[in-house]
Image (cartoon, rainbow over all chains, first blue to last red; front, side, top):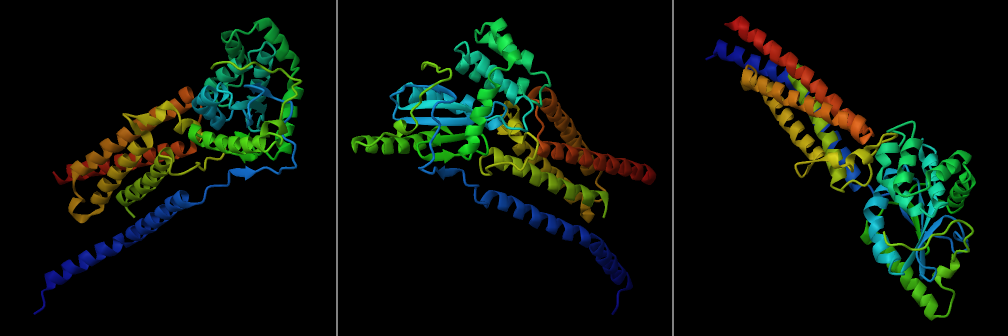
Length: 266
Length: 146
């Protein structure tokens, strides 16, 4: 027996199913593509960020701004850009611990080197502002203030960052007329460029980049990661010292000819 | 391809975008493919967290629910459901308002633009437009059938 109405019904159902087929195919394609993309992002090997320095390369000798004791066994060099968000994160989240636990305890000496990146519209002005504050022994105060207020003066925030920097200079206790004169003369532009060139010579290509002992780490770090690299460098330095060889600090001991500031408690 | 099917597909794309941002926020993905944008500035700002949850996680939940409702509307048994159509409209209206608020924060408070957040905002707007069209059509059909 044939049921004509049942046949019509099954034809309608089949037609509906067919009309949805492209949708289900597209849905499956999207699902597979989405899961594959996310899976790739999660599992892809991280770009190499830790490099061993060539032992024949002479490290930074007398540039930048230094915090910490001359007798510290290890010197950490940071190449940073004031407008780089990762540098801002390091400066505001990790660096306070680094200063309290490693610099102030005499384990490391910390050197800040300018590495203003081309893509950042206001970073040169920020580096100039920090240098002009350093002329009045306020580099680290200005360094902290600049990083903490990145969202107020970055290229995304304003095309006129100078009034913001002037406010920060006033806030950290800089003599403003002297600061203004320094800023308008751009007297430290050469020092900033020289630090940048030093970074290029050492193969720095991104910020922040740290040199800790013989390791170059091109990445932002948590305090624990930072401490791990410092501990390794300290172990090498201690072994060298006990073996009577030149210490790790000695290989890049500063003979400063630029403003150098005494250690301070953050 | 009906607008409801399109809604489900667009919601699925939004879900993957939100999932990508959430996994970054959770530290599972190292860096965001952000080009000239400032995704990290936005994602690491205090505005990237709401009620102790990453905003991106709320985004995943939002897109998952929108996808589920749109997928249900595609099925024959829910084709005539005015309630589900209205639910879709309410959800996507909320999504658009929230996206506008986030875009305002990016432009005027954080002063940085995250391109993935912009993509999500555009997706939320597209979903809203589709939901409005669907709901209006449902109302018109309901009016005709009375």
